[in-house]
Each structure stands twice: as C-alpha cells, then as structure tokens.
Length: 608
Image 1: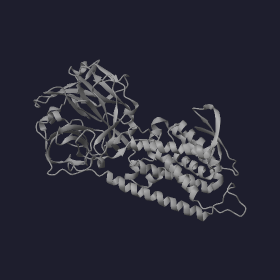
Image 2: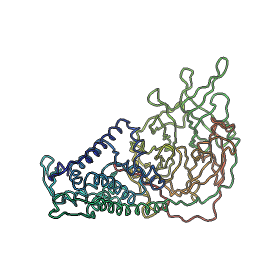
Image 3: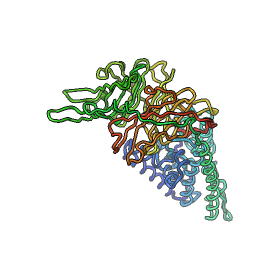
C-alpha cells in the first residue's frame, strides 16, 4: 500500500521535516554527480558497515551512524523514503516541537542502526538510507495519532482507487510485514533479500517507545487531541533512558561479535624454508622474455605445466642495442619433471613488434590474467580488463599459446561486485572461485563463489553464505548473502589442496610487508584458520615483496609448498623475475578444537 496523504490537520509549521527532506535530496544529487564508481566509494566510506563497525570501532565508525541516514541507493530509494516522511512527519513534528523532533529523528536513525547491528552483526555491505529514521516517525505516529485516517492506494484493490483506513491499521500492517520479513531472514538466510528489515523494525520500535514513554503535562482544560507540551527535563530523561538501552545492546553485540571471530591456529607448523636456485635460474633471461610482475601455473599433464604471466618485459635486439618492450601478458611451458630444462616462453608478434597472447575485444584494452583452471580439456581463465573481470575460455590450451582460440563467457554483475577470480580450484563437481570485498582501498576480505561442472553451457553461480548448525554449508543464489572467509587478504592469493588431513592451504604475501602467510581450512569454504607466518622475504633489506603463489605441481614431497614471489626495490630478487622457495610443513601435535561457526567472519548484505 502506498500512502497518498493523511487526514490529520497540522497546527504548526514543520520546518525540520522540510529541511530533512532537502538535505536528503541534496546528498542524493551529490551521489549522482560522483558517478557510479565515485558514488560506490562514497557510500562505502560513509555507510554503516556492521562488520567494520563492530571490529574497528572509532570516531569514523560512530559517525557512520549519522551519515548513513542521509545516504541512498538511488533515486527511487530516496524519493520513496522522503514521501513517507512528508506524509507522516509534519504531525509528529507538530506534537513534539521542531527541536525535539530533530533530536527524535536522529535518535530513530541511531536506534535503527543499533537493532540492525544486533540482528545481523556480520553484514559486510553498507547499510544506508533514511528508512530506519522514517520508520521511527511511523512508530511515533501510530502512538500519537492512532485514529487518524490515511488515504492510500492498493495494488489488489486498484492503484487508481484510493481507500481511506485508520492509521493504526495502515501502520500496523506495515510493521507486521517488516517483522515477518525480518524473521524469515533468520529462519531462511538464503532467501533473505537485500532490504534491512531489522533497521525498519528498530527504527519503528524506537519511535513508538519514545512517544509512548514520553511524560506529558496537560494544562487544565487541554484534551489529548490538542498538541501536547513536553518539558525539557522529560525530553532529556527519555532520551537518556532509551540511549542507555541501545548502548547496552551495542556493547553486548561488540563483545559477542569478537567472540564469534576467534579463529583456530593451523594444525601444522613450518618445518623449513629453502630457496630453489634451479627454478630461479630457469626463469632468468637477458634477451627475449626477461621478466614479469605476475606468474600463475596450471598443470597440463603429468610432466608439463602452463604458465601465464602478467605484464611482461620483452628485450629484443635492434641494430645497435636491445629494445625493451612491455606487453600485457605472455605464456610459457615448464617441464616440471625435469626442472633443469629452461622455460619455453610465448608472446605474440605483429609487424615484428611483441604483442600479448590474450587480447581484449578492443585494441586499446589489455587483459591481466588473474587465475585459471583446466576443466575437461579447456582452460577457464579469469582476467582483468580495466576495472572489469572477464571469464575467458581457451578451447585448445594444449596447443601453442600463440594459436589459442579464446572466447568470452559473460560474468554476472555479482561477479564484478565480489571481484571474483582472485584464485580458483576444482573439485570433482564444482569450480570454486574466490573474490574480494573491500571495506576500503587497503582492506580486502576473501569471499567465495562456485558453479557446478555438470553443465558448463549454463553456468549457475552460487555464493557461500555461512554454516547451518555449525557444520552444513549454506550456498545462496543471492550474491548479497556471501560471507567473508578471511580479512586483510590481498587479491594476489593461491589456494590449493595439500592432503586430506590438512585440507586446503592459502598462500599470500602480508599486505604492505614481505612475509609469506598461510591459512588452512578443511574445505574450500572453510572455516579458515588464523594466519601463520611462513617466511620473511628479504630479511634485513628495505624492500617489499609481493604475490606469494603456490605451485603444487612443482612439489615433490608430502607437506611441501613451492611458492613464487616477487620483490620491489630489492637487490635480489629482482622485480621482474619470480623467485621460488620450498616451504616444508609439519603436522602439529594437537589439533585445536574450534567450532566452524565461530570461525565465520562477516555476512555480506545490504539494505537497498
């Protein structure tokens, strides 16, 4: 039902309602002015992110309780909220007075956020919108004006046939719908949509409690139907009392959230780390292929692996010297059965100029390969093109890369939102694809999607949404239900299966450092352990190493990882040549007992 107006005369001007509507519209215009990317960054910064709020509580996060109330996810989202505020806000402002009404409105937005935090502490997407505060206005309205009439339309009775019903019926039905939807989210988390139902519930209850418990002074002869006058002392008492309640809920939820995020340690330790000089030399070149900034490998058969490189330096001879060219990507073959053999490199050539192996649809766009897997004789490759990620399929990956036949499979919008493709691995029935959700530019959080291998012509994406009863994995078709597996994990990561007992191990370089980090999980979805430092690269040197990628086909021992990495501004290793280390693991004496449920981090959802 959509309200057209209420039959309830307002006895005073309502400037605060007008000002609030104006501010919301101005902020909306500013968001639209920033464009799609700028608006998303603006919302991530100033929206209330439950997981970020509860784990990194500071002044900035407290400010988001206010700023998120004035942000919206689009024109319809904003206009819909402002219309409800216009219809019902004037009478509430009339009763409370403008100054009290302003405090009341902000308080309702605060209450909505607190209840949303308590109900869904793992949400990893900004909760934004004035709907929580507006819901508080509706809650106060049903207490102050239950017998007022609301003129509205009804989709069943007809949009063009307005009906008039009492406010307590109209707002009571509205609140019941929020409760039903909110409880459905608890009972069936997979089916829950992107609306922050509990923010609506929290705002409505906060507004109703404010109006119900506000002491009222009636001068002699004044009736309840006339505007009521509240003393400042009563206003302060009620605000303090209700703020104490929601603050207690917030403190309890922060402590509960911290206990939920405790992780177990890996069930292994690092026994030794050694440098593989043979592999290092096999990639060292002075002419032709001379280096890269990214290297991933995919086994082609029992003896040979395919290597795909990112930005590549090609040094070709000219008449008097060498001419170095940088191309977007290249490829190579490595006989890992005999690592002493040199790597065979491939790149394109047009008019005697080096070109990339993998080219985008437009000549001025270049692909940066991220990860890939060989499935039923075809190579599925995730590659970055500007800010987008594409899924490419190579139908003949065992041919020379210069003769590859490449086609593109469109990725859903959700895949772009989750930045899928950071790493991938296959099981007997699924391809698991990892992605990242950023809180900000320097804080990346690992998420997971998958699609079944039964019918690769109809790729059906599923997103890991947590554990049911502590053990059973939940997979959703709604990307907004994806949960974060681990925090502060960079996009350059590799995840491989070591053995049945240890399970899966993730390797990556610590953000803004030179430590190779390891994570462990029994299954691709987790629960993932706390990070373990495996190796300090370039110890004692002022440099930063990056991209620690495991290459399991190179391992010749049980419980061994063969990890490549690069160094920046270091004498050795050079920036352009991958360097290799062997990390030997040793099983721990005792496996820490940790509930899978307690190892979960964040739920990924939004309210628009």
